[in-house]
Image (cartoon, rainbow, N blue to C red; front, side):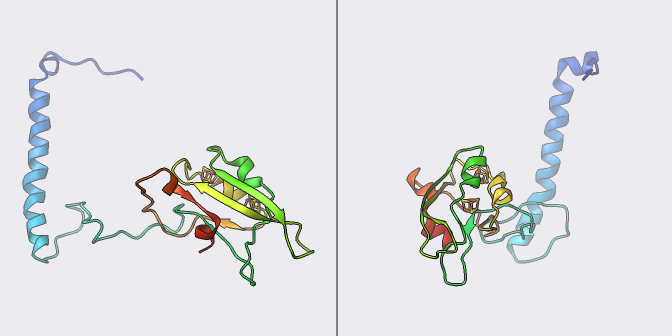
Length: 163
Ligand code: SF4
Ligand code: SF4
């Protein structure tokens, strides 16, 4: 991309610094009184101030947003997952770990004995959901607060994903 050459005034940077400071000051003096007014419970007009007082105030998420995974269950409460490994194979972050076992139902070949997702490594691409032939995994929990004090705490086990 071709950049426009700077003129002499712009090359001195002083005017640009002053313009930047003026813009910052304008936002401060417009928004600060609005926050004070909001603090007393008054409503301010839409669009002027964008600060969301999280976590007391939360925005609605889009229904399309990919959030923490969950594993779907059958009517009897067992995982719908048939341990086909499609999600583990397609995962670009290699953060899904599955160990398969025989399913007691003779009509279903396998089920997972271990199904872990390391959320700390997951890139939330949604490929696992797209690849699943059983609609056994979804990313629609709406859970986005996933912080943990340990790396181990970021690994979600099958019982957590089924809950
Ligand atoms: S969302 Fe993407 S990175 Fe995360 S577990 Fe699924 S496939 Fe892997
Ligand atoms: S793709 Fe679906 S059925 Fe296959 S292992 Fe993953 S969650 Fe289970």
